[in-house]
Amino acid sequence: MPRSLVKAGQLLLIVALFATCGGHWFVLQTVAWTKMLVSFSKHEDVTQAIGKTFDGQHPCALCKRIDSGKGSEKKQDVQWTVAKLTLFHESSGITLVRTDDFWEHASPDFLVATRGDAPPVPPPRTAAA
Image (cartoon, one colour):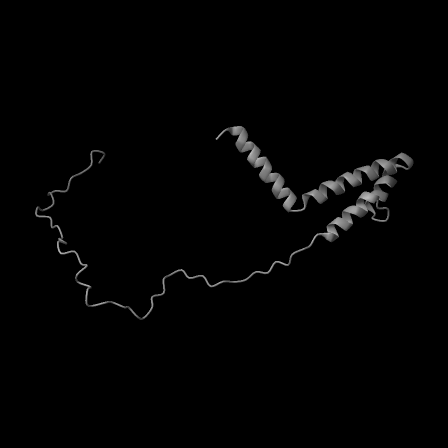
């Protein structure tokens, strides 16, 4: 896979995660605070402008729209349910076997091969030993 395609996929994943976590509200709020800080610092001292920007008493129009947008998003209540996890097969107490044709399906030429020769004495050793 081309490296540029992998990088594009990673960037898209980061952007999607950022948007899912509400990062767009953070970006908009940062823009609003920056605009307020610039606006207030034109008429007042920088320390007073910073105080007015972050005190919450002087919200701009964008701040009000951000608050209403955050409030209009539906917060879903996450409910966790605990399910029974079955790790082992639980066998039933009943086994049904048809006796009339059971032996007909068994393989008649099923043989177990036996080894006729004994293992070598002494056992073979590897060349690394």
